[in-house]
Amino acid sequence: MCLCFRGTKTLAYLNDFPGKVKQTKQSQTFNSVTTKVNKYYDYDHAGRLKTTEQQITGDANGKVTVSENNYNEIGQLIDKKLHKTNTYDYVQSVGYTYNIRGWLEKINNPDVNLSSTSTQKFNLISMISNQKQFNIVGEYS
Image 1 (cartoon, one colour):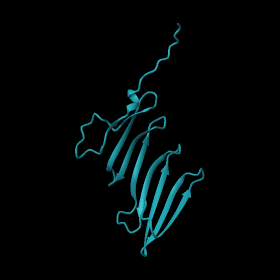
Image 2 (cartoon, rainbow, N blue to C red):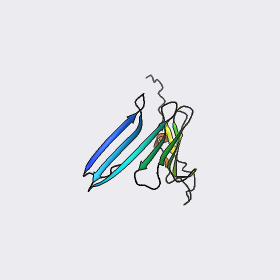
Image 3 (cartoon, rainbow, N blue to C red):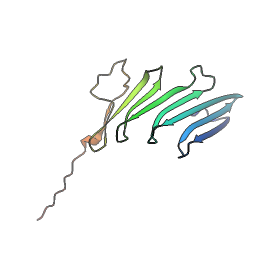
Image 4 (spheres, one colour):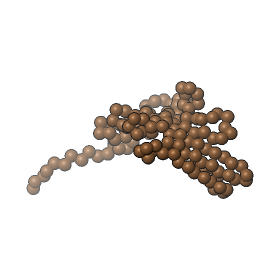
């Protein structure tokens, strides 16, 4: 998050033992007003990013969950929930679908009829599945 390009800006990082960022602190002073943004990162047992939280000083909401990631058995991201609004609800959910080779095929389900209450804000079918299949067979003349 870039607060502004003028004034004084300070960044600090807190890393865990393997070197993954656990927390960042950003402080910026502009026109004698200081804004502080703290971000917190949580990882699962395999070192994959699980949640990202943010806290802005002076914000009445306190710490807000910005994203929550879910992975399948082989470590591929299958669901990313964005901006938690209360205990269970998120503003947007992004689902990822892979083919048998592990290639990304779809982002969200393009077959879903989007409504104003849906948490899916966009749909995309990857063009990877439409690539030519090259079966190389030896030919002799």
